[in-house]
Image (spheres, rainbow, N blue to C red):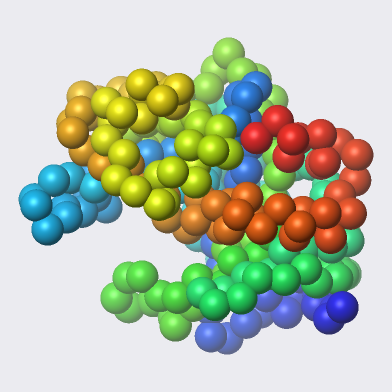
Length: 227
């Protein structure tokens, strides 16, 4: 099993660094629906609404854990507690997915659950973005609401897979058991699609043996089972 250090990904000259969070409000994944400026349209002119993990690009000299605390407060109004998954992590890019050993020389900085080396999606960025993704739980469920992005969505593993495999509208998403907490009126015929951390989560769900190879700590394993 190949070994990496957290610093290798943080200091990668070919990549921007971002964070993502896999978190639940009790049952299933909780993701944020991205800003309307990031929505697209399909060939039929129907709006495509993208969702992904809470998180974002690291600021100068910011550690991943500090970024997650800041982003969570800014995006949903609640701090988070990062759950330590262990010394193994899922490493994936556009073509491969595997489990690797991780080390870290930064005091009190947790290791990521997953690292997604995502190809550049925006002009003016580096060729890749290393998305360091962590497991976590909200500090205050009562305070959670969409503040920065337009909506929060909740969905289980099965529905998450379906959003990647086929076009699911907002209306159908709710009919299939998905939950939406929105501060704007969403187009009911808009199609919900995963990006970034959400796509990485899909790939872990598709290849469940990856999670077995992780040898997650008890608390992290119990959280994954809630998704």
